[in-house]
Amino acid sequence: MITLLMVCTGNICRSAYAERMLQKQLDAVTPGVFLVRSSGTHAMVGHPIEQTAAARLIEGGGDDTGFAARQLSEVILADIDIAFAMTEEHRTAVASLSPRMLKRAFTIREFAAIIDEVESDPAINMPRGHDAATTAARWVQLRQVSILKRHAARTRLNGILDVDDPYKRGEAAFDTMVEDLDPLIATIARFESNHG
Image (cartoon, rainbow, N blue to C red; front, side, top):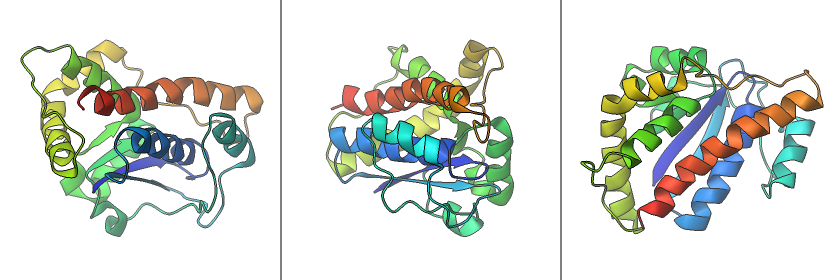
């Protein structure tokens, strides 16, 4: 099982939405191989997904059933293969809590740009296949190559690493959140579907 973690502040908007949407898309490609979870650096522990974020999630075909916000902790990070932070500040918080995550934590924008870099490099050959062992090997290799491609990805992004927090900022802010996150989530899922 490959365990991925989405991280934001309250764990009721961005990371919650991203968790459920990425899980849905990865399950469509490689069922039962990925576990996508989320937590917050200042989580509203036990709360469901924020109402507007939940509405956007459902509109996109996701499911908010049974969601409860969790506080980011060393215990949660112990089993995480890769963490996707909504901001550079959240990425720093992950690495501060668990030094093992230093080379496993990225902003979600950064990681999507890394995937673009990896897929455009003909010298990189990822293992192909959707069985559990091949998928695990592919994601270990992706994580290792990500460190080498991080600078190029950050250059491509021109310093825009964060996904803005829509909490209590109105409907338009949630529309922007979805517009920002959906292509990033799709890029991660596309990487998996491209290597079947």
